[in-house]
Length: 282
Image (cartoon, rainbow, N blue to C red):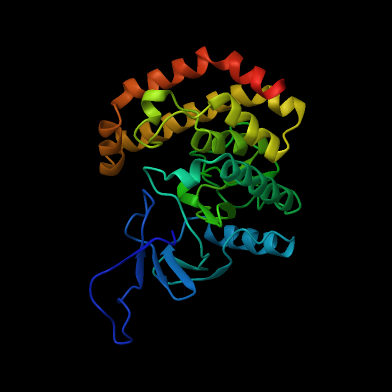
């Protein structure tokens, strides 16, 4: 779901591709998300009815940084308003790695949470537990604020897309998930392929994200530990899909160093835990 579209082959009777323009990016839904004019057509998550209600409520509470649901189709797809702008795809371009871009992600996430705090979570919905906060919460978190899911305009984050993994949780959990991708909370070897150029000051960038979001002193003290928990959750997410025979995740795991990469990452987080805490609380 990006503004950097790749057209499909063939044309329909109206001069457009039969399914619209295939939008680049994504993992699970790669090749299955299309744009037709002002609408995006994509596979609907199981929680779509509750999620659509939540997204409409966010707009009523003043949050305009998310697509608006238009409807569901009989063949299991959903239609949403298209959000124009730029989305960073790996390897991530320099404009997405500036401190200005990072700070704007923190502010956008804070605005989402402020609106979400005013919207009651539908407890009847079976929200996905894949990347959800194990402690739960009364607010719906996005849980996947990665570069692929943030729309930028003029170098600043303006909207979030792809709420498929949204689930109840604590705000600090969502910030930790965002930190994994935007700081990024990766050892240098793991970061090299996705964040070319290197030289990113991880403790400083972690502080920038915390400052721009407005984390409390208690949340700052908790954040390094919660980042470790989110990393473990992401590893379990990958392990489940690999065990199920998912070809996409099996290929990604092999291309990115296998389980040794995850072991190295966990060791790196442990080694630098004190430095991260100092940066956040100094």
